[in-house]
Length: 412
Image 1 (cartoon, helix red, strand yellow):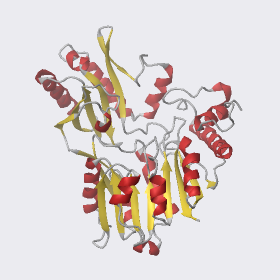
Image 2 (cartoon, helix red, strand yellow):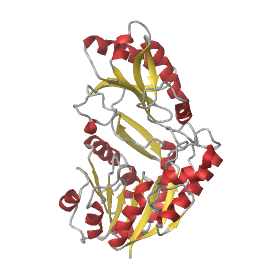
Image 3 (cartoon, rainbow, N blue to C red):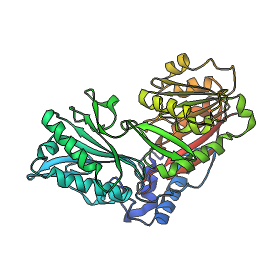
Image 4 (cartoon, rainbow, N blue to C red):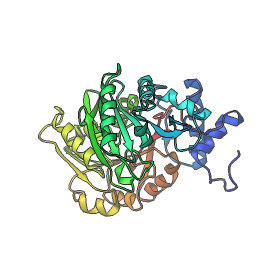
């Protein structure tokens, strides 16, 4: 196997490349999008099994849960805006190349309505009146669901004239035969590649609504989720019902005993897991660093008929650190707990797993969007008295080599 000299110094992508062989280079945003989906899924299944074996991860792993939308699933997409050879152009990614071959595959991941919107905007931006808007634009971003769309103009320079012309473009957008329900301007003078996340920008972002509702929404399993245009949301909404159902099964949320349990949802966002699972617990406690998402979570809970007045729900804003967990969470031991831990790609901060294990939750559902962290973080749980019961990979990102992985841990 063509790994490095250290037999354990490898990544999940190494196993994907090994499973693919020499005929397919795992490069670009969507290197697997050109494959038939059954072939792609078989390749990922083989690679994930090999990765688990080589990593010596304990616990039973299941087959990958396939995505209902095999292509055209991404509900957040972007184009980088550049002025080159006298014209406004849209490009993928951060590189200088203009639509390299591997990026053509990325359009296979986007809803077809997105391409209609981008083509429409590109034509407008190349009109003489609107070229100055394009020269001052970092990105154009499309968000929403598969039925409703929001367009965001991420700008590095704004003045009164530019704002008026963007408003004129937004008015044209609202009349397009695609359901663009809202539009926003985001000021990003630092030209940060974090085109939606103000926390990671060098300069404070200013968000200005052009038209439409303040929030976006989608429905899954009779639950309606609200989130702000600038807040994180799952990019494959077709997978959300399957992910929620599987999480509920792993945690046995409908067990009557859970009525006396507390559910702790960390990195809870706008309440994806808290709303779905929290209905079966006596208390729900969520933490996230994005206050806007927490506001939407509270709003969704208020409109959810399944949350009785007997269920205590609290969402708190804060970074997920050991110190915050020790000072913000209710005192452990007063009632049994179940934890859902869904960190971003870089994983949890040092000390977080230890702080959670100290509370002795009965079950932990640790969700990984970076499979490379599975061996090291599961080893931490093992040393702190927890066993890996089940490992469930989900094909959250068809067309790419990546997987989302849910791991159920229980006290030994």
